[in-house]
Image 1 (cartoon, rainbow, N blue to C red):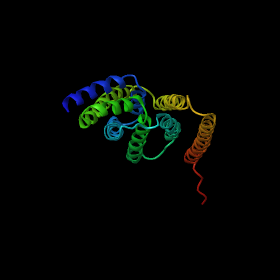
Image 2: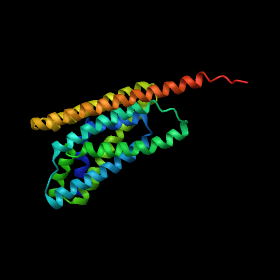
Image 3: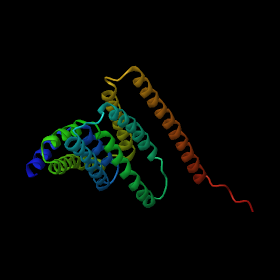
Length: 236
């Protein structure tokens, strides 16, 4: 088990260096508390690699990577729009921090879970689990990925202290759109025309609905600010 653990840790850690999951981790850490991001990544990674070990060691199967990439790409678009929407919240800072903490945890966890399904690290973990101790592979691969993403989180948290909030939000949204394009490209590279058309239609619909929603939210926020800056005079 120890040999499988060390092998899996080293292989996954090296494989994750420069991978999209590191960029995602850094993006989240630019805006949110590092420990929430790290905890969410740990939970998602543990679940993904548990599935990898199960499929590789006990079933000898693999997941449809192309389909998972498409689903993850669409999810990244939602997260990009959600990031832009989050900048317009005007609630009290303490209440906002509590509420955002829960939403960020589930957003990070779900995004990493979807992004890693069918990714090269999951496929590699399945391969390792087929020929090595499953428990060692599970622990080692999970620790390797968490360690690699922890480095990215440290960089993101450091940069977040020196950048304006609006700049961070825009940069994070751009990166999420980039992740979406990356995942969709790999998922649709060998897909049928019908699948490509349906996916592109879903992309256009998501962006359109998100743009309208963000616009209305900002208009509502400006309206509230206008009323607060110009209170109605009291008639005696």
